[in-house]
Length: 253
Image (cartoon, rainbow, N blue to C red; front, side):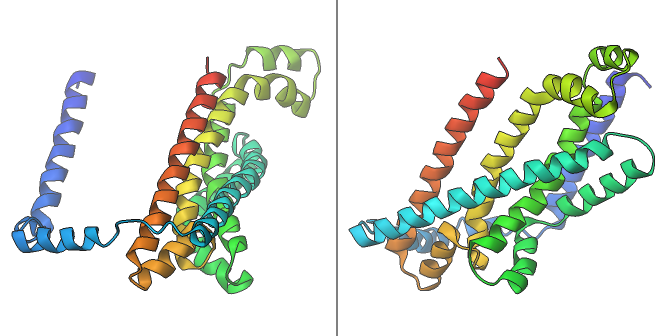
């Protein structure tokens, strides 16, 4: 079978899967888009405005925003260290390769929210379990990406150093790492963007930050306060996205 027909077959299979998914799910579009549902949603949305702008509440929201930002930054920094430590054996060979990849699979297969719930039992409420949950899950993701980068690095420089008798660690430091560093930085920045959003969600289970405020005020149906928290979340995500994009663009020029 030619590559063209293979691609066509895969696309047809995906289309069939999408059609089967719509057919198997009980998606009640008529009720969702009905006049009563739209009117109820409109009344609910109007309750969010105007946002709460009291100075005391804005100061509280600003502190929670900084806490969310700090959770994502520390969690990502810990994940870079953990990911590198696991990526080195995962990019090698033998038993250590299989063991390291198994650990990476285990870490990233458990969602951040589940890690946070498990760690809440150990550390209690606050930003610590949320930060550690981000670090554990992101270590699995970054470790896999870092390992793939090391394996796909051009081998010429490393081979030349080995032929001169340079040891394995020095070859990695002076050949593999410099060649892959822009890619590693790009992966790290991208995961930091994701961790900003994840940190906001983790607060819902009591892990601090904007998510904890959102859960509290939404649970009490304090919609104006909820709107302010949501606006703070959107502003933080937009700011970090813009900063990360510019940094990635600079690193990959």
